[in-house]
Structures are given as structure tokens and as C-alpha cells.
Image 1 (cartoon, helix red, strand yellow):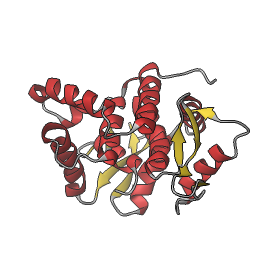
Image 2: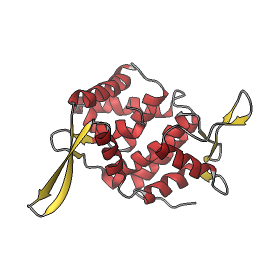
Image 3: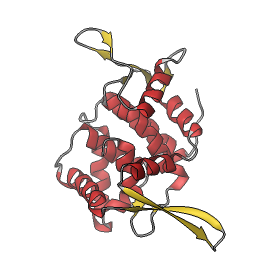
Image 4: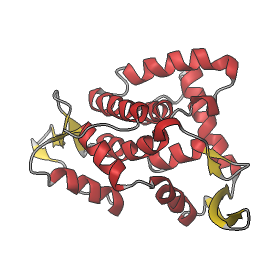
Length: 225
């Protein structure tokens, strides 16, 4: 997948029910919103300073601001929102702001995958009265591949780059570890995930963003500063 939110929603999707797995305190919603910030940091468009404030990235070689576009309209909208702020805001501020803005962010990501042909949406009615949507994979090997990549990165260190480390940390923040690892694997997996999130591979900016997302996902609500 091109974006972290796409991978994360596929990790959360139950292919049998067509629904995302239950997530305590809306942790998955915070993880998805936080993935916007992480994608922009990973692309080198944003940085997080020593005071945990999100700022526009500077190209070290020329001392100039990085381009204010990513080629994706949705990401560009959020990037420019950060850049247009009257003063630098914390990562916590942006995660909270975007979570409130997108109270139902999951359908946005799911519809994106429908548009890409990865998911198929089915309209159903609960008790024949209440409409609901379910999303089924058009090719289940896509989800299996993402799961296998995460498992290999955590348990064996295979394919563990900065993007994968960010996805693994988002998975943990979204309380999806149990959906990927078997019961006997979970103690070791959690220990390794903690080390990945805190390791140098992720980078300081991404580590700070991840901590913000994990805190927000755990509390379910945070105060804007």
C-alpha cells in the first residue's frame, strides 16, 4: 500500500465479517489519523522539534523549506494546514484536531481502498431495518502479505525499515497486536515492538509522533494545547 492508513486498516479488517476489529477507546481512529502525520514526516515534509512541535522540514543540503506538496490532494491539504498555522503546534494538537475533524475516519480510508479495487463494499441491514456497510477483500492475498511482512519484521527483523517500524508502532497504538500474532507469540512480539518504536530506526521525529498517537489512543481523548 502507498499510505500507512491503508496498511493499518487492512490489518484491522476482519475478512470474514467485513468489519474492522473492535478497538478500545477508539484507538484505531487515533492510529489512522496519526498515520497522516507520520506519512508527512516519513516523506520529509514535516519535522518534530525538541519541544514536540511540528514544523516544516528543511532540506539540509540547501537550507530551504521542503516542497509543500506530496502529489496527493488529501495529504497536501493537511500538510498545508500545518504550514499555514499562525505558530508551531505540537504533534498532540494536530492528532487531536484531525481526530475531531474526522470523527468517522475509517469509512474514508475504506472507501479509498474500494476506489482502488482492493475492497468491495456491500450494503446490508441489521434486523432488516438499520443500514450498515461491510467491506470485503477482492483478493485476500493482499492482506495476508501485509500481515506476513509485519510478522517477519517483528519476529525476525526482516524488512524492518523506517516505514515498517512506523506501521508496527501504529499497529500497537491501535491495539491490533493480537490480530497479527498468536497467543504464544504475543509476549515476545510486544517486547520487540516496544524496542522497534523506541529504536533509532524510526528516527526522533517519528518516535515523538508515535508517542503522541499512543497516548491519544490510550486515553481516547486529549486536551489541546
